[in-house]
Image (cartoon, rainbow, N blue to C red; front, side, top):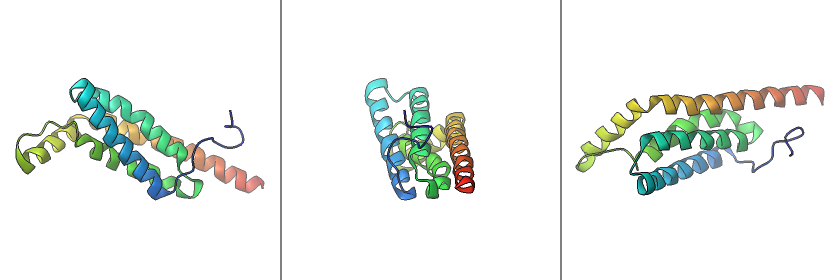
Length: 131
């Protein structure tokens, strides 16, 4: 385990972290729709580890991007599981309804990413002051 010295895993740029998070959330939404019939609870639960990984894998210089891309990726993946009627307006209404009813998961994922980013930032500042 490499955590005491440095966190293990890839080091993503801010853009890379955003692309990773959006892509994985879109795939999670697609698989949720395929396997569980678009269960919003399953989608919300599976979004939390994606948020944590995004916050852990972003480079130290791009830490502040993680809590920003997490809600955007949640909404992007929600497009695949939101219950929209016919047409464009039905899809928009389904997305707005899903975002309002699943706000707890959205805030929870953002909170997870934010806490991880704050802890990583504090550790980074302490390490720079020592060295």
